[in-house]
Length: 578
Image 1 (cartoon, rainbow, N blue to C red):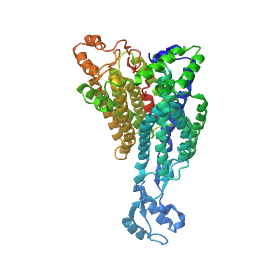
Image 2 (cartoon, helix red, strand yellow):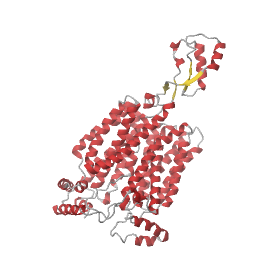
Image 3 (cartoon, rainbow, N blue to C red):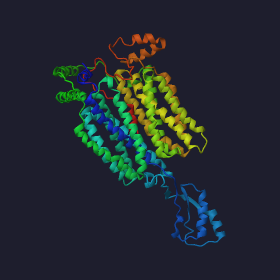
Image 4 (cartoon, one colour):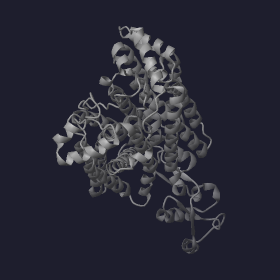
């Protein structure tokens, strides 16, 4: 008997689960704020060097000032002249001609920033331009390192202490850390706070998703991902409006952080996962929650069901596993090695390009607020397209959407200068392709890994996606040397990923592999005869559902009734990668 059998008794997706889904999906709307904040708080406006001779108190003659002003037209925004020997002295025209040949160019120490788009950002606050320009991107990468840390810690802590407590700690902490960030006295305190923000955001995102998933039956288990992704998309678009009206970075940071205080109410709203409680032998608490859920759904739960389930869990705990699997099993055999490396690369590419484009919207030359709104809106048709494609194929859409993203990025290279609208349009097309690919990759990856190492495969893939997130801001730094370099990189890596999809099997309508041997043999049989493979792939496990509805069935037939394997959605990766 599985825990899902208990859910069938109390309702797989009744009123109780619907209300829970609302509570767990709401934070996704606000998680977009923290993820996208750096686009606006860390934006670099137009700037020029503040030349010291513009100060009328230096005692320079008007002729000297005019000459210096004209000479400075040939300087870049990071340079100025050393005029120490010119102060408080008069000069003839000949003297000035001589001086103009002997002026020393030095590094600028102060800058003037345009305020037509941004009143202030961390760039204008701490002069993160010229030789300090890379610090801004490094800050975004450090945020991603925080996300990586949160991925490691939150999973361990949630398995030990429960999903609810991690959510209740992480959500209000976002407000605290956000407010400290808003009052950061220097860039280094700001970066530390962003690192901590990345850590707690992932803890909240993963566990709200997991909590909802563990309360919902298999037939409706795609709803949490769909709803949470939709909420994130709406938050993505709303962020453009908020940033439009609040153009001072400190006030914007405060506005984006205050919502975390509202989540203190979750102390009275969120239940613990009954699946997790039973898995940890907290049967009494689980029974009370299941009875409450049954009453809310208009169902009744026989007491004998839970008593028998508890006895079965106790019996399962005394059995020794037949074999312990490790990360090495992902690359130990030829077929798994091929699948794993391709999956790792695709996760890396999807996060790299998705956030590379998202963070680079200020470089396209079009109104940043409108571009942000469009970049969020384009995810809606991407999601709808994926929903249409899922029943028919996995591999072909994955290849196609990566190719669309890659080609669109490369086409920006042939657009003549002075056509920012065309460049932005192609970038939006690239965002559509990579967004659709991103939505597809989780399901496809989960299907190519056998059940016995599926979570390890997903975890390893997730690690590679974080590397892509760390590198995305750094790739955009290449614009300092070549304006087209980032788009060349994004386009090429996407096309390579599209080509590598050929090496993966088609999984739509196929039974999921349970063991490593199934994966190895399945691939070989597909080459010989697809029909023969379909007949032979399932003799070792009966009653395995076909995944034609786009649902990933992770449960093994002989798995414990209270198995609570972690579930990670690509939408959660998307929401927390930066």
